[in-house]
Image 1: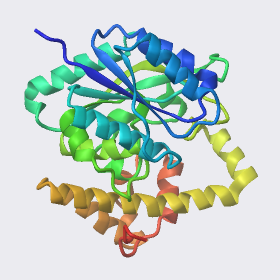
Image 2: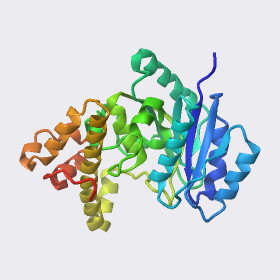
Image 3: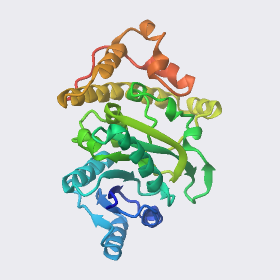
Image 4: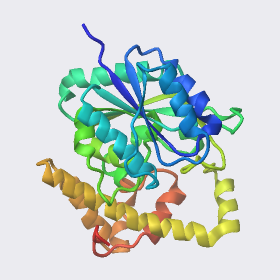
Length: 325
């Protein structure tokens, strides 16, 4: 019996400093059947040379997927790779990789075992997603925290498809998804915030499973597009004290973006003939008055209570934003 293939999608941009450590960790995976598809977003450092080096030395595993429109950012770069994987139709499952982390050797094997269990329970035609915890390391690979979820004060197992509309607890570089999810996620709509959050939302039409073990060493450094942050009370108070205006601005922006993203999900599910009632109810709830939402905000806003309260207080209701604005 043939072993199902996995496509690892690696989007790069000026990542030469940590690229080799990441590629080497991908090539050390114990899962025996995978391809690494790489798309660069117009790097100006040595990243393209390193990509060429690995592609020439590992021609059966490393494949260059030239980006037709470089310079549009990580979401579009990952969308390009997602389209390539879907169109080539060689992989049963798809994983996402950042350019500067380190994967533990059993990462793919652990995720595929869980994916097989999910699909064996009648979910093989439905969107499925597996994600895991990860440890946090610094720029020199020194351990900061053995659990990203603990560091961020997140509890993925308590998250629901409703709460994911407001708060993402799925880390993209740990995800393994199946082809039905990839098909439903594409094309990524204008209202999506980031590719991994969008995929997490799409999994609400099927099933999502979290494995509470770290399968990746997540490198925290000054160039992270989305980094890990210490969410202790002291860390939060320090940020509020030093940069209050920026914190409030980010909260307000995220409120608008989550509305746009939820509306995009409602449209996608409706277009594909899938149930969108829970998304519609969320959008109606977001439009209700602050007093009306006071008794039920914990349903949609998971995580530390300070985060929940700030969303309830600062996120504006009103009419759902136009996706074309």
